[in-house]
Image (cartoon, rainbow, N blue to C red; front, side, top):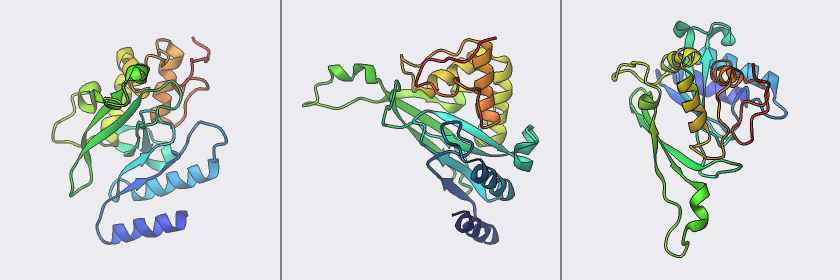
Length: 230
């Protein structure tokens, strides 16, 4: 419950400690049956305890490779100075629909719990039918480094925090290639993921990261995009 979460965060604050929050369904999820009130309450808790207590938040559920930014004042001040903490939405080993299988490794400062780099790996599900399961299973290969994939001139000594990801979204507004890269990695480089070459899709991907919501039909790469292009 939120009361338990608040008690734990307050205890961490009193002790001068930093924490991670691990959850399954991401807050603000744009899928079916979203819970608006709990999402709002969770955002207020994140606002209260970030970034001095909450170092990072990790979610799953979508099976896709995504990220979200939490901003001050319940998300109403979406600037670099007000970027509080990040929600990493990890790729899953389970491919689900039209996705590859994947996982991620993080480089973490064990004192601050900040993430300084992440490396994502994937297995090509389209090749699974050729695997001789009596000899071996799927083979995972390196997909990308976050710093290299989203290179915004970020200092090597600075963590991949909410300020970094805000800089990435700023770059995405004018750099269509970066948007398409984000879209490709969202499906773990699956050949079945739809491309994101339209203005409407690019705007939706930016919105998903910075506003925790995306235009209908553009959020997930598990089916062809059906949103209106403009």
